[in-house]
Every structure is written in C-alpha cells, then in structure tokens.
Image (tube, rainbow, N blue to C red):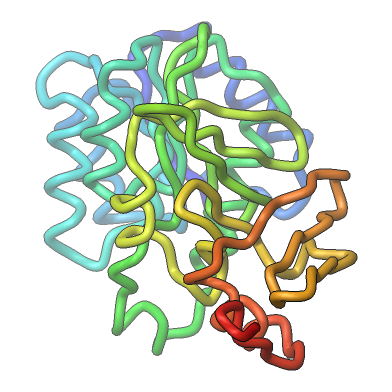
Length: 247
C-alpha cells in the first residue's frame, strides 16, 4: 500500500516514518509539509493513502481533503493534535482520525482500515449505504470512532445510549429512535424499546409461556425482548414464532 505523509512538524514526520517502516506491505512514496505542496505531489504520485495533518501553513488538511474529494481521491487518515476537527473529518469520509501523539498500534489499525476500504467491491462503493458505519464518541483523550462492526449491543440510559463493544462500553448522546434510523437492521436488531442486540452474539434463548424471550449473549448479558419485537426477533433468529398475545 503506497502512503503519502503530510505534516509540517519534523518530529511527527520522523515518528510516522518509523512506525510505518515497521508495518508489512507499506511503501512511503512521498512527503509534504504544507497543503499546496501536498495537492501537487499527491496528484503526481497517486498514493493509496494520505496521512494528513490538519493545521499547517497555507491550506489546512481539511481543505486538502475537500480538494482531493473532487477527484478519485486516495483514502485519507487525519493526524492531528486537536479533537475538535473529528466531526468534520467524519463528514469528509476519512478512513480514520488519529490524535497526536500517535500510538503505533492505532496507526496500524488505521492502515488496516484504509486497506479494507481500498479493496471494497466497486458495487458497494457505487451504492453507498444510508446507514452509519460508526459513531464518534467522547472520551477523556478526545473523540474516538466506534465502528458498528464492533458493537455487540446497545442499551438506553435516559438521554444516552450505552454502546457495548467487546473491549469497552461507550456513551453516546442519542435516542433509540435515532439509532433505529441510523443502524442497518441486518447488523444490529432492536429487540426492546430500550435495547439493540447483534443477533450473531446470542448464545441462548429463554421463552415464557407467552412466547416472550430473553436473550443470553456471548458476553454474559441477558436482554429482554419486548412484546412488540418478539416476532421480528424470532424470525431473525430462525426460531418458531409464538404470538405473545396468545392465551
């Protein structure tokens, strides 16, 4: 994978070079220290991925990404010391957003994500999904991108949603109704007015006489299925349907 680095800080450039040099299949094809030079050299070198600082002399990294978006652009990974640009980076469909000082493992993760996006089927790229691929959530170190693919279940907590992944729980200010519009039901299913579950994580199902279910997931959670969701969840799991209103 051919990578181009844009950063006006020599120490940051050196660190990125060092980290990328330890990754298999990565070739650094060029560097630039400002936005104008970056656009010129990216057009000439046609890299697969651009590591792009945001605050630089001349054009900002965001302006560079917008200009690249007007053509068949490479994958962009923003690298910056500031978290407040994350929302705009997401709007520009960046592959990832790394906060300085960049950890080597996060850089490797970003390269892997860019690689997956590069090899995505053309048909998928031609018909982009209206559903979210991930969410930006706040943590002490700034904004962190949580991919939908990593979400195991979601539960409501007043005006917030607790998003459970296999590593940790994140808090997002949103409603269950908004999430239902933003999540692909083929990935994560709403099972209750206050819960979503990735059904592939369900390991055991309990039913009462009325057919209402409790789902036992692989992480040990027990999630009740609401009466109005029972038939849909049973069908998605391939279970015999039982009408919860039957006597």
